[in-house]
Length: 227
Ligand SMILES: [Fe+2]
Ligand SMILES: [Fe+2]
Image (tube, rainbow, N blue to C red; front, side, top):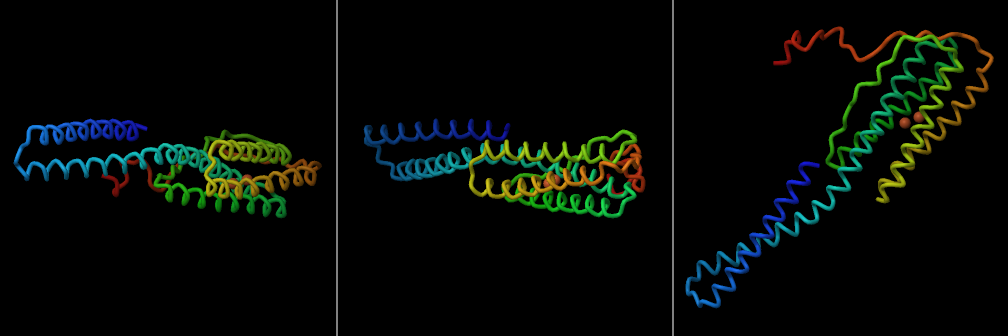
């Protein structure tokens, strides 16, 4: 946002300069000055300033919308990463192979979404933010409770994507987000199906504390490649 504010300020300053140049050109004529170099200089300045201002006008309007879309997409990216981590983590913890395979499939689908969203952010000139996942506390839960967690995650995903579709009317964006929303709606249906299928399963899943940790690399100060 700071950038947009500064560019707006710069554009206003340039517009002020252009006004001054035009004022000088009028006086140049009125006072019948015979210096042709000065006349050429004023004409060049007027053309260039005019050109800069109209270019900035287009870019600033565009940037405002793009900036907000990038912010939104980074929010989506964060959600996808949480999905990747949760599905993958639970897939490795549940004993039932069919359930583990379904959870892995969801995780892979969220991974594909994360790639697409990161690409879209880059195409818009933004920087994908790879936020670390939410911190998870140690817990014990049933398969049904685990699936309920996923259900909440999928409902949140659909709601977030729908908020984006309401806010941004760009057709390319609508198509892009609309496709991801369809996948999330499909995940939601599948998770609900699994909830029915496994409601009698009383197995307990144990989740260990986890957060991003790099045991191999140690602290930043111990890393020889970081100056
Ligand atoms: Fe997703
Ligand atoms: Fe999903």
